[in-house]
Length: 74
Image 1 (cartoon, rainbow, N blue to C red):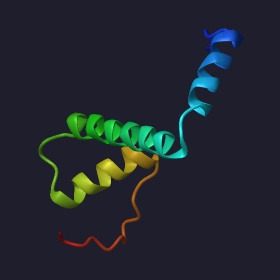
Image 2: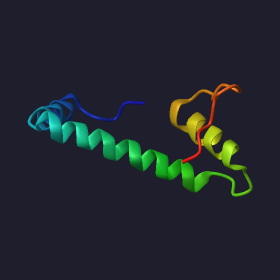
Image 3: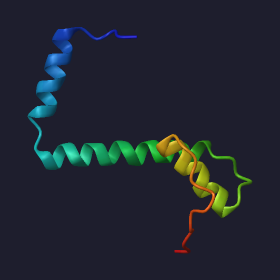
């Protein structure tokens, strides 16, 4: 579904291009952090630590974490 006019798209694109590379990078990093926070909030509370990591990985990247992934303790 596309409900944005081409004029508004052009204004938005120009707004984004007027930002510095650093500002655009930080904007993306903040969106990534927000998406992960939403995934954490939706995560079932009864998962083991390894299953929590698998859940967040799948929600973040859209594919399951390989079963043989070597988890490291922090």
